[in-house]
Every structure is written in structure tokens, then in C-alpha cells.
Amino acid sequence: MDALEAIRKRRSVRAYKPDPVPPGTLERLVDSAIQAPSAVNSQPWHFTIICNQSLLDRISHAAKSHALRTIVAAGPMRDQFKDSKFQIFYHAPALILISSRNGDWASESAALAAENLMLAACAEGLGTCWIGFAQRWLETEEGKRAVGLPDGYRPVAPIIVGVPSGALASIPREPAKIHWLD
Image (cartoon, helix red, strand yellow):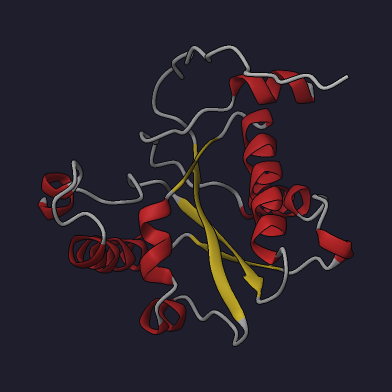
């Protein structure tokens, strides 16, 4: 699959087969991520790969509780987050957490790495989804300890990875809004 095809096919996947993603594949995805540009070539990223389902369940529970207290108390996800059966990572077999050192444009650099990772996963027939609700809890001291994040780093992009359990829907895009200045 070429780059343009991966760009057009990549979707946020929220249903996965339980099949584990081989460690070598996860390492290839991280290698693709680190090929991303970074501000002044700072390469501020750190990758944490979690395949332990019991740890993912614990993080899911803590992240849902945190979200209910801080950001979705009255929002549309409230009932879903209160459901004990709902797992915020959709039971994906792997989570790759991209973190960055503190510094100018470090989050933007980590986001570029995240997009590379998601496009590489798509090219390998895998699905991904950036789980923003997990990010807020992972930013807490408790969250950083839970995943063993080194001092000086902060979570930017928690991305789940796995084999999609169904066909990916085509999502129509609105035309680009372009303002030309000649």
C-alpha cells in the first residue's frame, strides 16, 4: 500500500479481534513513528507499549473515573463511561503511548510521530485509534506511575493497535476550504 492509499484508508477503529500484535510489528510501527519530523530535530518522544490486558483494564477504569470527574460529567459519553463493561481501549490487544519531553513544540512533534505510526499500521492491515480520554488520566502523577513513564516526559498520544474485527467504513470528507493568496 502506498502512502496516499494509507492516508485515504486510515480510520479510527473501535472494534478489534483478540489476536495479539507481534512484538516485531509493534517495533516496526515505532520505527515508522520516529521517522517523523520534529522541531529542530529534537526527537522528544518516548514510547511505552502495553499488551497486558489486566493493566489496560486498570487504566481504562481509572481513566473513565477521571473523565467522569473532570471532563464528561454532563457530556454525551457519561452513560458509556459509567458502564462497567465499557473498556476505553475497546479491548484492543496493544496500546502504544507516545510521550514527549517538555519543551517547545514537543507535543506537535509527538503528534507527527503518532500520525506516522497510524499510517504505518494501516499499511500493515492494522487498525488504530487515538484514545484522548485516556490521555488526561495518564497525565496525572498516578497515571505516569502506572505506565512507568520516566521523569520529564508527559503523555501525548495513547494509540490502540490491533486487527480490526470488521470492514472499515468509508467516511466522506467535506471539500477542503482553501484560501488562495497569489
